[in-house]
Length: 483
Image (cartoon, rainbow, N blue to C red; front, side, top):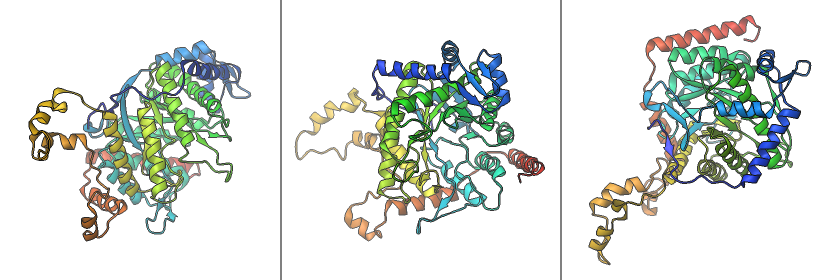
């Protein structure tokens, strides 16, 4: 797996005009100047005030001058590298590189009844091991694969989740943010000698909790990348129109970037969007909506055009479907493809099912095939003397000529045609003889095989140190009466 990821070899999709981009951008700057952002962290407010923001400590509001915001954005690097525990899984984020990441779920799901249950810590460990063997998976969000565990108090969910990923997932991870969890998650990353990136996501509209701010600050101080993100419900916590939701989301992300650049100028940033429209029929978020893709295509275009910053898309991660079915496939597939061709650098999608309610390793195997197919599309078409094969075409000529036995075919067919791992590609008669297996059957088999083949990447000493830090976290929350 190359550290520069999979590269999009053609101009990214854009649907906004230059004038529309500028109008949305100016709208976000105006919101930051007039209304500002509410930071519930007193430490964050002190940093912002010292850095030149107008801070109202009574309302916890920080207002930011446009020139200060622009200066902060211009300090952010366009690319950055992150170290994984397996050096082959280190990544370089930005530019035309694209990576695929796990998407979280609270619970696991039974593949026969489609009912959810609270997973065990071992379920989480096993899901990490399977994801570790998926060739098109490069990273993971925090509280992933699961964010509930049998017999564990809420205070321990993030520390356990990070402990599990750092031990059993040799790729890049995000950390944070719940009360104090980042303290132990940063220590774990340092013990494993890896880079993580910190969640610094808004509580819309225009608010950051103390936990989110403290996580962002701590990661910047440690030299880790930070992921400012918006996650509004369009029609609920964000405005109903896409353009107004973009203004609000951009203001939230920009406000977080200002704080991070004050903590550590030049700290790496990856800007996440996770806006979902409200389903006015049910009152719940409408996961899988094409409106999410419209939002994220615009988001990618704005950040790419104005500042060239790395961008992340999380809204396309889950489907509204409660099963691994046709709806699940088309909602995820369409969304991920549109994110990829519009310039996203990281797409959070692998394994997520039923909104953020559930995750399953078998879903991750199927999503891995979606990522592989999209990766092949992003590579585009090579037009060279060798790929054109003019001499070969002239040599073979018309019928009865054919190309199956040619060296050129042997060399190029696998490069040109992506072959999924968990799809039914058999002729009909062979499918009948083979037991009529479906993609779900093949995915189950591959998940079992990957679990058996898993090999750890950390040393025994590093694993012991992670265990020790996890126990420190447990004792910390016991003293607070939270565990």
